[in-house]
Length: 298
Image (cartoon, rainbow, N blue to C red):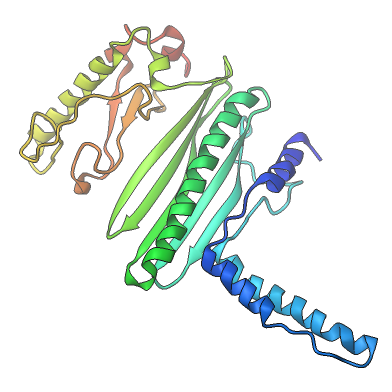
């Protein structure tokens, strides 16, 4: 068994299983209803206990598992690897479904033997986010019940995985009346072993105003070319106005090595605009970006 398999096993024992209150109550009621009858022989005396165990197992398989599905790698000796540079696997899946609510939350684990601290930072952040999402979902199930519909989905993609750079994209889709989508991007500079935020890419702090103006310029040009497009800029009638990006705004690099700034749904535009992205070409920011990040994908 290799080190990654051992890490998966260790992670499996550390992960918490979140079970909604109504499931716990149902389990307790089932156990309390199973009384052991007085019997004459030792062989017959075992029957109620066997029945109780079987009933609990059947209840767990039919009720609990559809609500909390803990899915670790089916074979820890042969885990599905999404990359041959940094390993990423689904270490847990929370699943729930009834006539009114649905949840499907996939939690990845990043394993980078050369940069374990950076990988652990990503794993911890994702675990905290997922735990909060799952907790909020079950609270909604308890509070709303069959008086409303709701669903939440979490999935991930490996965007870049090279000897120098790693990017993981987490997508969270929430549907409560109307749907919303937001993303989280995680990066590792494998040449330094550090997590890299947007502000770390640049030489000076004026990068945010430069990129913001570039994005606004693209917005105005798109609106000029298509009157059906709308962005919340220039003090529009709705009172919203996209001001500027911040130090930890989402970003990633495309195949050309250009910087891409993505936005969540409703962040800078009405819902019908989806989740816009803006490409900032290297030639537009090469004077303010650190040299190593201009050339990291060559």
